[in-house]
Image (tube, rainbow, N blue to C red; front, side, top):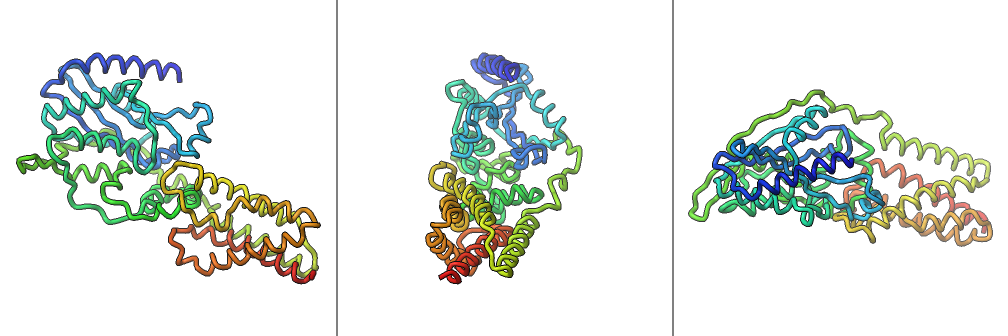
Length: 393
């Protein structure tokens, strides 16, 4: 990591030195789009970078807004809270392309149809952004990421207005990211759990460019409209720099899906509950374990909803069935003298979950279908808790 950072620093010094010189009329700026891959979670969405090439000045640099450091202190906590810092780094194109060749990812280059003045304006803006005091920015998955930043800098520096033509079919933010994770059912499950109802808003065509693949498609159709009404295509030429080496479409698939896991949990708990009813007994540990897990998950959801600064995480209707109060309920279930309080907790929880299940299709939020057996599991235990409480009156 230290060697890598040193290399980036040296390359940045070189870029800063060359920034004092105006690029030649042969210089070109292009958008590099790396296709999604299954190598890591963050590669499922693809990647965008900007390439500046000027052979007259022996310059071939990639500006990458997607640099982050896993080793930073409290990275997971800061990521969950929405305080992840990314940075812009400039480095040699050869290092960039080798990484994706080794990964086996397809990289497409779109050379932009820009005037020399526009190229130099974008070049200057990129160099300024890459300075240490400007390079770090607060990452936002939907609205400020490695794809939205290149879009913004192109739109700001061209002489005229970028006009996007033939907009894509309307989709919600959730539809867009769930398509990216379609072969990773557990990741889809987690995203559906963590992201609230704002994620189900239909994204505008411009907002859809937070995903690199849509940026590439929209740039391909876009034009630059000058102040005098003249119009030219935004993209001059498109070239595929690397080919996709392997077909990873099924690599993320697993037979042990969230739905199967949820059904197995429901069947196990239902069997235990039937045995309790049959033998007129109560396995206290079942409720303690189940509600403890639900309470831990509810605490995470509560953190995301009320403490995290992530967009689109609140309101989240999943907090109706996963709530931090379930941790307090464990104490009520474990201590016999709290039996009456436990009965009232079960009653309230049973009523809330009954309404949730009855109105499932009317909830203004997409709820993963694998949630249903899990909700039914907690509903069943609270229902049995109410039954037991009435039988012992």
